[in-house]
Image (cartoon, rainbow, N blue to C red; front, side, top):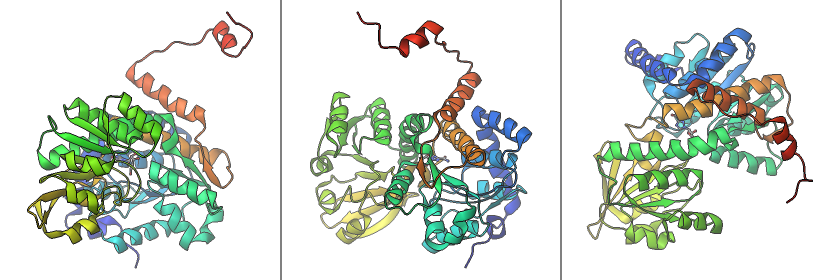
Length: 424
Ligand code: RBV
């Protein structure tokens, strides 16, 4: 079965559209990069004739990106990239745009989630925009006939790029995809500040509990883990980091955090936040040694980091104790609280809003210029870095909007940087 657009499924589409539009307008006010690109896109119509298929977290900032791309001339079909991250009102407001069809709905089951991806693919996209690679995977598995007419794709997140590179290594990726996540303008800001701020905000709003004096265990010290650790320390928590990479473990140690194996961290943490992108990070043995009342949250893309099947088996019962908090009661009386069903907490908790708007302006600025690039040049199948000049273009628009000036290299400096004959 193929999903119908969100508007056909809502009780009061008009009210939803209005509240969604308000959220989009607010976000747009704070997204100067997309605003500048929208002006250019409206004038030059670089995406005229293109059909975009998107699978993203459908909330206000994503809507601003989507409407920017539509302003550039594209016809767009969009759905969610997580069953819990869609804001239905934003989805309805997007669906009201003549150039956009939105299938995204919050709280869908697995079948409905994949039906909506199929519905987007039915529009026969010429360009895909993914967050997590589910659209690229569905096209390769079930619609290989479409690949010849696809110019390329863009991938938003670390996990998606990781999956794409694995696919590419296996010789199985049959069209070009830009690793948007890997640009400096994306991962040095979105992954660090975006994930850091929004994960802590979502956990705090979901529980109304303080960070001060808590021991926060951050699993993984990649860009997301760095952000979460730094912001938690900034809220007066004691931070413990777990790692598998020796240099990252050392970096966390030199930053002043305690580094422990999860086997030991499990017993001392009050709050656990996983950011590894890998599976089985917190497992049965860890649950066995945790303190009563701990909070367990995941900030990685997929819900595989906390072994919820093992926790369900171990628990005598479970119940929702607050919206977005499920308490698992163990036979010895301890209670472990899982937030947002172990899905990425900054987007999937009932109160979650995703990353702050300014951060998404940068990430989605890179998305917009990457989509534009796919219409201007042709790339071989495989994973591609976004050309560096595009990333610089996005940084320059932002600096300009902020009124921040920077220096320019003089001729002598440029020459010096390119020479090797000046010694002591
Ligand atoms: N992310 N999107 C939002 N639209 O509010 N917030 C975070 C939003 C993206 C972020 O770029 C990250 O790489 C990805 O979600 C993880 O799924």
